[in-house]
Amino acid sequence: MRRAPLVPVALVLMACLALGRPLLHRFDRGHWTHNCPEKTFITLRLTESPQPRAKSYRAFAQVTAINDRSRHGDITVYLRKDSIAGTLCYGDHLLLHGYPDTVKRSIYITSDHYLITHRDSTSFRAHLEKLRMRLLHRMQNGPLEQRYAGVAEAMTLGWRGDLDENLQATFRDSGLIHMLCVSGLHVGLLAMLVGWLTLWAGRERRGRVIRGSLQLTAVWSFAVITGLAPSTIRAALMFSLFIVSDILARRTSKINLLAAAAIIMLVAKPSLLFDVGWQLSFAAVTGILMAKPVIRCFRCTLSQCAVVSTAATLATLPIVVSTFHRIPIYFLIANIVIVPFATLLLFLSLGYLALPCAVFAWPLAFLLKFTDTVTQWVSSLPHAVVEGVTFNTWQLILLIAAVLLLFAGAQLLRRCKNESLSQ
Image (cartoon, rainbow, N blue to C red; front, side, top):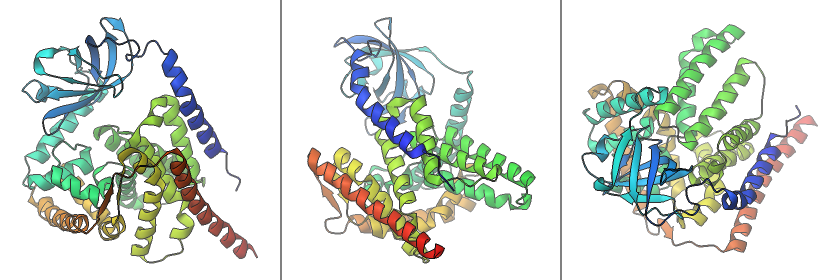
């Protein structure tokens, strides 16, 4: 079957956006960072509910005006912890007075330097955000220990405000931080779970329509409730395209579905190209899809998990090195042990979300304690993380070339197999 050239189109679009961004930004006089005063009044709208950190609340927002002049652009707001900041939610319009950082596109503010000018209580997204907060409060008041409740909240609602900092560090150092981000793993497991529950519908056209409709409803409801992070949208878009192709009984290349999702997201919001979460998400899935010929060579589940984890890590390695300057060395051990339990962990977390009682809390706590033990052991191993890794431009180009050669080898293996089968 001849593939549509979606991958080259996606790559050309990304290249054009990457090369054109500096010029567009330079001549975009409507962006809030253009000629922004050192101290100014900023009017903005919160695009997500603030999440608590160690000493502040962090929220993402969209600027609407600077000193009463219409402006646009994203900004990250850090608010000092107080009684007012704790009541803010998605859709709130704020008026700030402070010193914005135009390089980092952020601003730190105290309670006496901002006020709420309008609250969004009627839009569909606002109602969904209220539902998300109600579900969060139910989970927070459940019987699950707070240390582990934060993990369940992150996996099901995308809420990382209650995550224990030491627990996050062990997940990060052991290479399992992706477990705490709502992404393709979670969306894929949810779609698969709904597919299993609707096997009764059969494989005829009517059954495929019923199953696909329920899967699409579950996937997008989950994406909206969890905050519509770039990784979640990417996963929801990709699985939606796959579900639609299944309804129409058409076989489509998964790499083309991924490219289509990238094109749709970049056309809708070009700035996503420079979002680290978006980059990591697409790079990881691309690596896994490119490594499918190697994955199929193994029949053992543990071996397949090892290849999947290695492929995702290699694909994201240039981004991780250039952005975070650190590499977890023993990621393979943690992923082989924990990832096979990911389905059960997500199922129990979703069960606890729907019914926060001891029925789900006890087995979920047991599995999370086991995960915690493994991550602590892996992160405590000698030289578990290499810190301060810095590459210059040429070294980074060589690293990217090496990674591409490895994945090209995987594709060559697939072609050799197809040729041997055809003979």
